[in-house]
Image 1 (tube, rainbow, N blue to C red):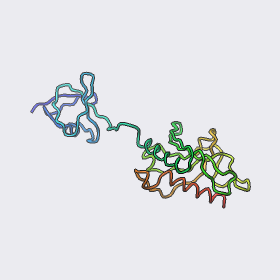
Image 2 (image 1 turned 60 degrees about the vertical axis):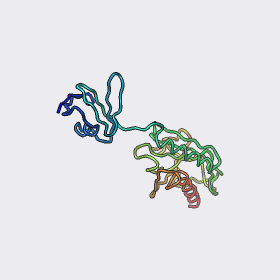
Image 3 (image 1 turned 120 degrees about the vertical axis):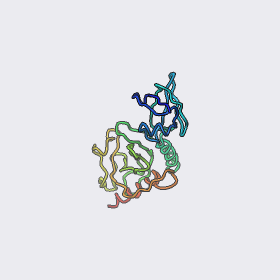
Image 4 (image 1 turned 135 degrees about the horizontal axis):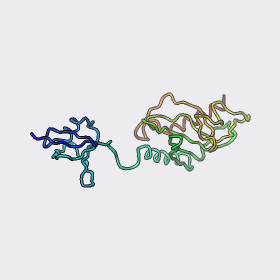
Length: 215
């Protein structure tokens, strides 16, 4: 049985074979099986597949890297789908995006109906979802944002509605007030039609806003 000295991620490693499967190479050099293994030569990189048998050569260059998928990250597809559903539900423009500075994604409903008892019939509403792993929809929204200067029918500021800048409201300069609620039970699903979603969360928002002006 021959042996060949190759480079793995730039470091020399002697492999005790003339031929080996991708899995054998990964196991021998300590690369997790779930990672990709590639060989680079002649200015090109070739991904080695599954149990493919590799003909080893002296000095060949092997590299490992995380697995990947083409296209937009899953949260982008999820927010696109939910925004379309919200637009149909509320009959208004719904947009979404990412705030890199705040490290979160957001969805904005341009005309969210307010329950009776508020001093306006509708408001803009923005819901933010976390960007950090495991992210949305595994993690729920934490509070939501409304237009500033909303009051109840008596001209009072309802509880849990904050117009001041804080670490929980980095969007004061964009005209948003923050409404503080924390979801205690959240049942996520990989599909928008099963489990909790922003559509259901905004149903909760309407209920919360109804209670706020009754208190």
